[in-house]
Image (cartoon, rainbow, N blue to C red; front, side, top):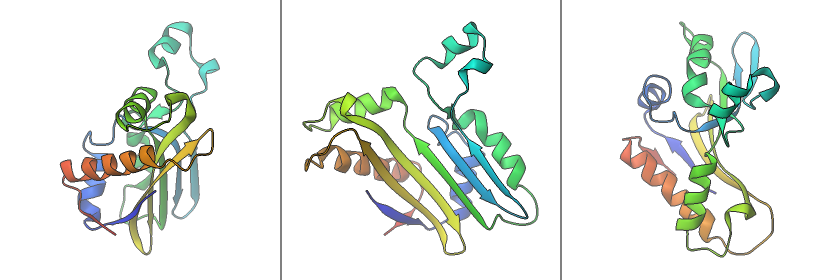
Length: 164
């Protein structure tokens, strides 16, 4: 797990809401506080969709950021910045498989529930926090270290300056 501060909030928000930088992440939840609070549960409600639509989701459990960011942006746009915002992303199943397999760890993909990226905005600034949910306990941190390094490379590649 790493926790870092985002230096250029405006640049980050542009990449989050106006570019495709985060589009492939799935969204577990979004919490916003403005004049009122908003909570969005990103879990797909498959009973809502017909069989053809369900096939499009394949292994997807949560809505992709690309499909939700317009809704979230419409809530926060205006003259006042939200007092708080928290977005919990999880990587796709395909990305999870790649991360575990490339990490040179003793873990198997089925040993990991998910790789998470939390985006937290409040009066102290904008922070990102990574996390992993394991199905079993181990002292082996190689998959966690690999994920953290991958996130740091992702931010660097996308010109997002973060500091510890």
